Structures are given as C-alpha cells and as structure tokens.
Amino acid sequence: MRILITGAAGFLGSHLCERLLLEGHEVIGVDDFSSGQPRNIALLSQHSRFHFIKADASKPLSVEGSLDWVMHFASPASPPRYLKLPLETLLVNGEGTRHLLDLAVEKGARFFLASTSEIYGDPLVHPQPETYWGNVNSIGPRSIYDESKRYAETLTTAYQQAKGVSTRIIRIFNTYGPRMDAEDGRVVTNFIVQALRGEPLTIYGTGSQTRSFQYVDDLIEGIRRLMDVEYHQPVNLGNPEEYTMLQLAKLIQELVGSKTPFTYQPLPQDDPRQRRPDIRRAKELLGWEPKVPVREGLARTIAYFRGLLDEALPQEIQP
Ligand code: UDP
Image 1 (tube, rainbow, N blue to C red):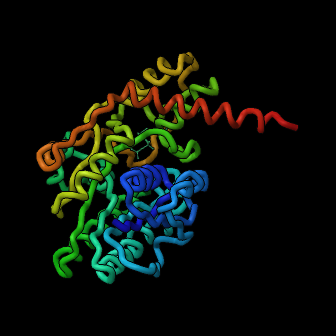
Image 2 (cartoon, rainbow, N blue to C red):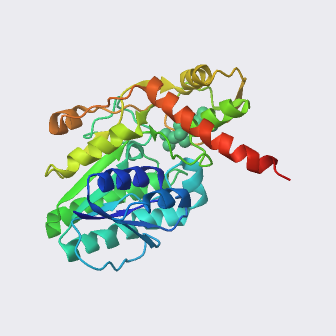
C-alpha cells in the first residue's frame, strides 16, 4: 500500500511508519518538526520506501500519485506542548483534519484519525467506554486539545456519512515508550529522566490522580488491526492497568534504582482525576488487548533513556 502519515517525526507517528515499512508498504511521512524530532526521520530515511515531506499538516498538501491511506497523527500532544502552541494545535486538528479528509476524497483513500482519551475530559464515568460523551470544559486550558480532537472526530464522522469516506477513529490513552520526547513534559518521561539524573520527582497535586499506561508496541498493533476492519465508530486503545501518579513515581524509582525524593507542585487546572479505558470494543472487534505489562514496558523505556542520557553526557561535558 501507499500510505501518507502526518506527524511522522513524532513518537507515535515514527513507530507507525516503521511498522508499515517493515511490512513492505510505501510510506510518505509529513512533519514540520514543531513537536516532532529530526532524529526519528533520520531513522526512517534508512528505508528506501520512505519519503519525507517537510510541511505543516494544518495546510493543504499536494501529493503526487495514488494513496491507499491518509493517517493523521500530527499534533502537539503533551499538555505543556499544546499550551505553548494553542492556535497551531487547534489548526492541525481542525483545518488539518479537514484538508486531509479532502485529500482522502481526492485520492479515493481511507482515512485514519488519531484521537485521544482527552475527549472524555475529566470523566465522571470510570472506566471510560466509547459510548461515554465526556466532561470537557470548552474554554479551559486543555480545551485547545480536547475540543479540537472532538471536532476532528465530528468532521471525520461527517465525511464518512456525507462523502462515503472509509474512516477509522482511535482514542489513544496515555502511551509511552522509546522515542518519546524527553522535553515534552509528560509524566513518564519527566519521572524517568528525573530518576536517572538523581533529581527529585515532580508530583503535581497530591499524586492521587490516576492514568492507565500503554506501551507503544501494543498501540501500534491495535492500529494495524483496525486498518483491516471496516468500522467507523471510535475505538479506545489503551492498557487498563491504572496507577496513581504516586504509585507510578515509586515504580519508576524502583526500576531505575534511585531514591531521590518527591517534590510536590500545583496540580494544573482541569487535570483529569482519573482515566482508564474500557477496551471491550477493541477486544471484540480486533481480538486485541495489551500484551506488555507496565513494569516491563517501563523497564524498556528506562533502558532507552539511559542510553540517550549516556550519549548526551560526553557532549555536555566537553568544553
Ligand atoms: N504529572 C505529574 N508530574 C509531572 C508531569 C505530570 O504529576 O512531572 C501528572 C499530571 O498532572 C497528570 C498526570 O501526571 O495528572 C499525567 O500527565 P501527562 O502530562 O503525562 O498526561 P495527561 O495529563 O495528558 O494524561
């Protein structure tokens, strides 16, 4: 197949490109490096079937030749990143989704939207099934991301219904693994990098809020299976293993073998108190469930960041 993937230099986009390249497909990656990392494109460029377009995915793209899939993964995704890029985030999920849906219509391609568990907001139903409509503050700080992804889901559904585009929508729950951006302020990377550097772990609020953490390979497998099924409703992809942030901090300390203290910082506004996917739909539809336990996935991720920090060290101490 010939597949266009926006956000190819990002954490999830680069893993998805790699998987599809390894299966023998031709992949056209799009990124403007506003939150993606050039090192990920350097890695993908080793494949002869990978082509790169440096472009802003919120603007119309002209692509030569046929396309079987348009997969939209471009967007700042960590709260600090999308708060720094509010209009860009709204545009890539709003205008970007619209232009990419138009591209799918033009090429007769299928369309795949990377949506998010953030569309559930601060959920009052727990765990969250796809049928839950969510609890979102439409003008709160997180609305830039939440509401633009909600709009992207609406657009995708409208194109499916009005124009007959074969669409897929996934709601991605907190995902971690190698190639995450250490600087993007997410809890997993913050804790791992802090523990490796012997710095205090920054707990926001009391640390009693929960998240459920999925290893990236499990997510990619779920995406791959959904591509082969004609199904247009949203599908949750996440690992139901749920942790408080304090439990996560202790687990990461244990796995790193570090005993640095915790430092408590204010809880960001509208920070969801709990989050855990109900994955019955993915199980029934795709025969999918996460395979990598959090402990094992974190150990792999810690090994990756240990390697990165070791690499960075000699350069930092050079005069
Ligand atoms: N968090 C934390 N310390 C950090 C970074 C984040 O305690 O250094 C908390 C944050 O307040 C939230 C949870 O960890 O409750 C997950 O944050 P993240 O930004 O990774 O993802 P999201 O809030 O989008 O699920």
